[in-house]
Image (cartoon, helix red, strand yellow):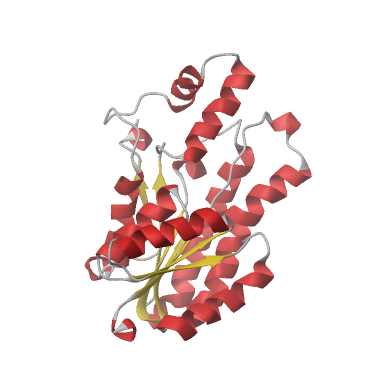
Length: 256
């Protein structure tokens, strides 16, 4: 039965957006492989999906070390067959003024947010079925100034450029490559950013976050499921003629 189902691989999937994506793909009939460095939370998330009747597997990996990626990909293929959907979701961020950013800070963000995306694609693409889909999670920060998150914004801009290039490279195999650019999302990462910004501005986390985000036309911060459903669309046959594109899922922030 496993080989008849589509296989989805999601990075940074132990919690937050990654878990919502895994759950959404599982609910649409995919076998899902969750990758994350938090082994305890990863197992809890896999157990939760299995309790709901889904076929799910967890792989503990630190994506900051690209040498670990090929072995995990091959183990996935040996277990459930070639990959149909790859979602590069894992991401990190920090909040600092530009003049305080260190080389270590920069490498921390770029290694996970951009370097790992490339090496995941490099390892997974040869194992993907024709007609597969790669979805890279970027951010609206890729196209707007982020003085307190300069490395994050730069990494996500790189993801958009990478998405376009790889879409051309893989087009002959009908593998589609697209990016999603979320806006503010109700996750642990956003809460952590709010705490960091409040310590810099000497205001409450709520006030700091509001000042950072500005008005959202649709009037709310997004839930992870809002983005997960967009991922599900790009992974599906409904998006079979969409490649090399970026989709903003931001409540209208980018049109202001």
